[in-house]
Each structure stands twice: as structure tokens, then as C-alpha cells.
Length: 294
Image 1 (cartoon, rainbow, N blue to C red):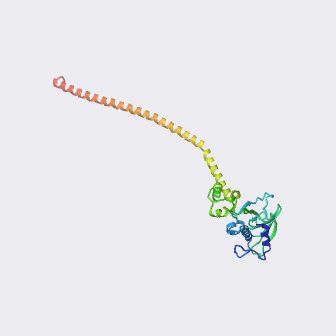
Image 2 (spheres, rainbow, N blue to C red):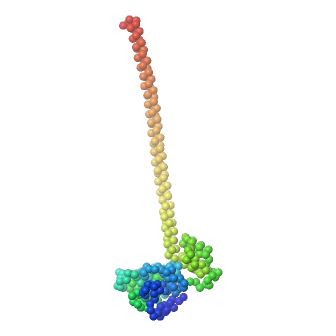
Image 3 (cartoon, helix red, strand yellow):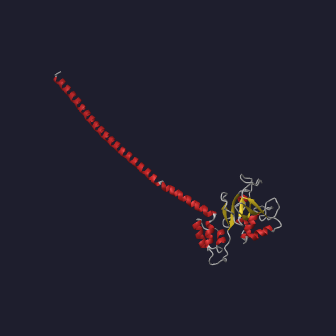
């Protein structure tokens, strides 16, 4: 579907558009209307979602996000991209209008100097219009490029099957596809398209970052093994030294106990001899007295 046709339709309106029923012609109504134009039968709630302009994060199944690099003048949004802008006023930008919600619209054209935006704004009561600004007018956060559906006939032999979709999701995202993904992809897109779509998704990038972080954590643990092994060896040496020292002490104690036992035996023997001498002396004294020798 042609962006030019969508833009012409918006510019030819006699009033603004209120696709979300908020009661006003908000700037976010433009990308919501554009998404429903691109993906017939799919609500803007699914493709764009709720939120103020600066907080919009269109569904990666339908749009590819490109974060704006303010230091790269050659990075430009293509025609038909949804542009998302931050709040104003903001240091470094000329727009002094107090707008905490940010702004959004679709790109009519862009070059290194500035961009022309298809837009509308709440409170103006105006129908959509085109407006040019340089890149220093308001801070551009990102733009979202619609993922166009393939033109192959639905249900064709080259369209992805659920089994292949499951394999791709498990491989690239580490999970099975949910009902929404199955309904969106199966029978409508080629496997190559789905692989490219999923690879460029925010979820895949986060999943890959998680895998990288886990690998780094495991590598850090493995790097500690030599240190832990050395610590175990050092502790083993200390335990062996303490065991040897204990054995030596036990030997000394055993020797001392043996000596004590021998001394006790000698003392006992000496005690018995003393008793016998005393008895003999008493017997001699009795004999002397009987013989009258004393």
C-alpha cells in the first residue's frame, strides 16, 4: 500500500482525524490511522499501542525501530516512517513550546538539514498538514519503518508453516511463537521474511544480549577455576601439616604416658619393699625382748 495515497487522503480531509476516540485531533492519531491503513483488519491497539507521543513503541512485528543518532547527519528516516519526538522545551533545541507529551507524525521527506512531517496537533482543531523543521527544532528520538507484507499469494507453497515458525522462534528467541505470531506469520510470509523480521526485532536483540551476558558470566566462573584449585591445594597442604604436627604431639604424649606408667610401677614396688622392712624390724625387736638381750 502506497504511503503517498495515505498522505493524500489525510491532506484531503475536511477535519482532523480522531481514530482512537479521545475527543480531540491528537498527533498520535496520524500514526494510528497509518498503521490501520497499512495492516487492514489489525487494530491500532495491536500495531501502535497506547501512550503519549514520546512514549510510543510500535509493535516490532509490524514496525522496525531505528534510534536516532544525532551525531550522524546521514542517518535519515525514509518516506512513510513514523517519527517520534521528545518533550519540549529541551536544552539544545529551539522549540520553546511547553509540551511534556512529545510529538509524532509520518515522514513526508527528510535530508541532513531537516524533515517535513505529516501531522496534526491537539487543541488546534485543524485537519492534518505538512510542516518543515530543521533537526534542531525538537529532539527526534527514533523512527519506525513499517514492515510491508510480502505479495505472494496467501497459502502458497512458499509461505511459512507453523512447524518452521516454531523452529525459527525457538532458535532466535528461545521460545515458542504465541497465538498472535502464528496468526500473523503462518501462511502469509516466506521463511526468509520471517527470519529477517524476527532477527531485527527488539525481543531478539534482548534475547541475544541475555545469552551474551550468560556466556560472559560462565566464562568468568571458568576463569576462577585455577584460583580455586590453587586455594584447595593450599588448604590441603595446611591440613596435612596440621595432621603431621598432631601425630608428633600424640607420639610425645604417648611416650610421656609410658614413662609415667613405669614411674608409677617403680613407686608401687618401692612401697611394697618398705612395708616388708617395717614388718621385719618389728619381728626382730620382739625376738630381742623375748631373749632378754635388751
